[in-house]
Length: 270
Image (cartoon, rainbow, N blue to C red; front, side, top):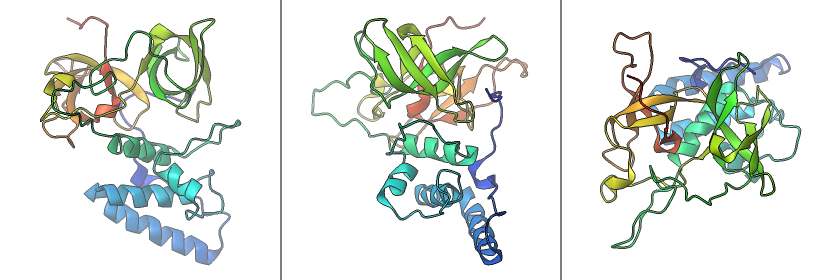
C-alpha cells in the first residue's frame, strides 16, 4: 500500500504529463494545455475543475488515446461512470483527487416538501440499522495499514454477503489495488445528499462535534472537530484535525465537503 500520511498529496494542477510517446508537436500542444489549466486552477471554479479533469484524464493511462469526446469518458470525468471489470487500471493521483472533488460538488442537495424530515444518509444523519451499501457505493472503511495500525480509508463497495454479514471493498486509491473483506462495523456509508443549512440545520454536524473527515488531498479519514458547520448549501465544513504537531493538538481550520464527513463513535481525546 502506498503511503497515505498527512499532510499532502500532489495537487491536481501540478500533475505531470507523460510526453515520451508523443510526437514533438503533440508534446508542445500538451505542455501549452497544462500550462493553461495551471493558470486557471487557482480560480477553483467548477468549470475550471471539469476542464482540468478532462485534460488530466486525456493524458492518463486510463485513456491512452487522449480522446475525451466519448460519452463513457465524459461520464467518467464527471464521476458518474464506474469501471467494475478487473483488472483496475492505475489512475494518476492528480486525476483521482480531481474526480473526488467533482463527486463532492455534484452530490445532490436534499429538498423535501414542507414538513418532511431529511432521510438517512442526508448530511450527518446516519444510515438505518439494516442498511446495506450497494456495489459501487463509496464508504469509509477501517483497514489495517502496512505498519499494523488501523486507519479509515475511502473505499468502494464490491459486494455484500448476507451469509457472513461482510463487505468486500476496494481501496479507492488505485495505486494500492487492495481488496478488503470487512464486517459491517468497519464500514460507514458516505452521505448520499447534502443537507441544506437554511432549511435542515439539524441534519448537519454541529460545532465541536467529533467526526471522521477526509484529509484534503488524501484518501484517508482522520478524527476532527467541527470548527464551523456549512452556512449555505454550497459551503463546506470547516474542521480541526487532531494533530500532535500543534501545541493545542489540532490543525488550523481546513475545509472538507459534506460528502466526506461522517460520524466518529470513538471518544474524544482529552
